[in-house]
Length: 170
Image (cartoon, rainbow, N blue to C red):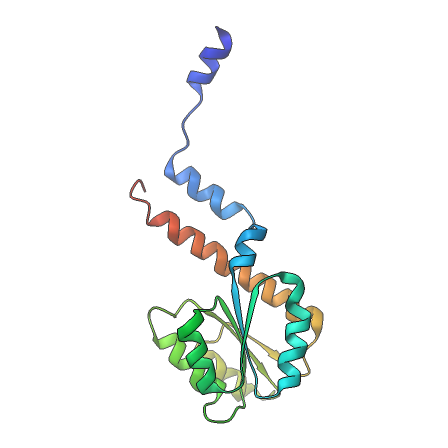
């Protein structure tokens, strides 16, 4: 009888409780496996190196070799995160970033600029285009993996919150 009384006294979780629990929970392996990362660099060796370093994350990895291919790949696979070279033929990383961030359907895509440029003006231009972070070449493996994991985690949490907010009970 006492157990039944205790069970009936337990409060049902509210939508707010569910939202808070979803935010606190780390993205699962399944969520990470569902994530897509687009690697964009006109230097094939750079793409292959980043692919090798990121393979352990078990995300879907897609590559493009210039800005025009990057825009096509974004339309095709809607990546969660883009590692984007700045200096490329046909369309610069700055232009690619600006186009993506101007599109309301793609605005939340995380973009990390990867650049050999290291002047303050270059970083300011990257921020003005809407990039979320930047790495300087030559890229350090630990720094790349750490930033990708961190920003991908934020992206996946945001996706989870958006899905919960679409719930009519909220």
